[in-house]
Amino acid sequence: MPPLWMLAIASLAASFLLSLAWRAFALRRGHVDHPGERRLHQVATPRGGGIGIALVLLLASAWLGEGRAAFAMGLALCAGAGLVDDLRPLPPALKLALQVAGALCLAWAFPLLPALLGEPLGVAAAAFFVVGLVNVWNFLDGSNGMAATQALLSALGLALLAPAAPGLAWLAVALAAASLGFLPLNFPRARLFLGDVGSHALGYGVAALGLVAASKLEPAQAWLLLLPPSVMLIDAGLTLLARARRRQVLWQAHREHLYQRAVARGWSHAGVCALYAAWTVAACALALAVAGQTPPWPLAACALAYVAGMILHAALGRRWPRPGEPLESAG
Image 1: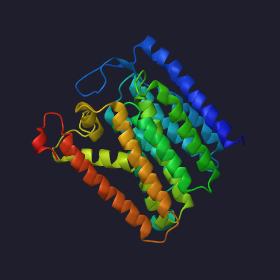
Image 2: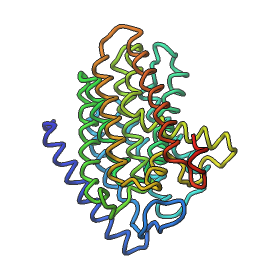
Image 3: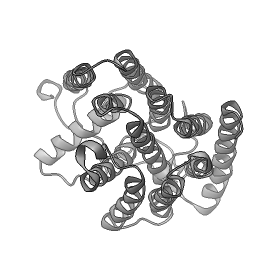
């Protein structure tokens, strides 16, 4: 098994070169996202560049150890659904069915807390977790650098929470380095978009890290695994709840996420990315500070972070109201 630094360099280089090659292909074949009222970019930009990240993760799965075949099969289904959708839009129901199939592959290999929940419920919970993060990363992939930066930071945070798992370290390094390799083409100016193949691969990778880490931790410590991706879960969760309350179609593209509203109100993509990254670094630091503490500290730290995040989301929501919503009535 080669050292981690060698994996990091290879993953970074492979992700960058594959993304660069895909950009040329996408421009030649017309696989581009055009500006529109539900998008934040102003020029036509090729999509699907995250295929390099998906391929790096697929290759890195060879060193995952137990469960590598399930990981690879699940990744192929989830990222493959995204790739097909990037090339030729899929019906939402079929896309979700492929995500669920991919999630179940991983969930059977790494059920969530089976000693506490039991095997069937552990598989169901793990599959829900995977599908949730795949779609959360998809929903929040709308601002330059956001999805890749969050995956990079979350991967490192999750790996540090379970340092005794060699396969997890390999997967975390591959995910973080592949995300970093993609960023020069997407941040601060986007010359290439991840596309659904990339956002699906990132969400799937972060979910896999969480499940592998959970299998190495005591149940009381598993709450801490919700801290690294907390800003993504808070933004996506509160936005979906608000849209459900207004009886809007949840899977329809929109510009109501907090980061989208910030950009619409004049914040730069780099500024928004830095704001979200700062939260994730703080959340990871909190998780590491509480790691190893006896109950109820892990649960209390997780609850505190999510309550604080929801309060901050509401406060910033008044500053950055939804499109068409007057400033004084936002919230």
